[in-house]
Length: 97
Image (cartoon, rainbow, N blue to C red; front, side, top):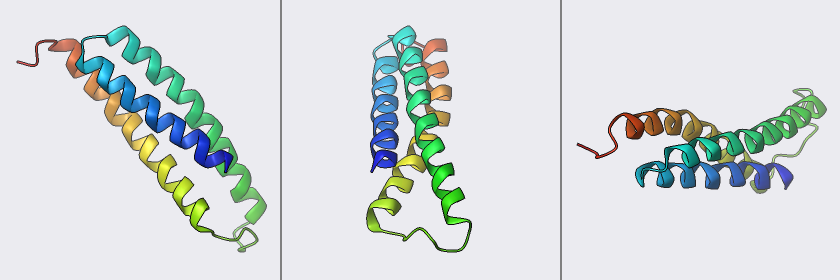
């Protein structure tokens, strides 16, 4: 469950960063991206621990909540990559021209 919380928090913060960038608040957007990195790092640590416990042998049951948490983490990681580029674009072209 903690994996889902951390990944979901990262995703939400990153989407807020994009909204801030779109509004011209580039400094705040960068700050939110940095905050999201902490959530992603925590989620990735949990994911790594689960992988280690499983040892590739199916010791960890794959539940719907685990799949959902993995989905949130992968989405957050993708949004993080895209958000950094998009924030830079908003910084370079604040008027959206």
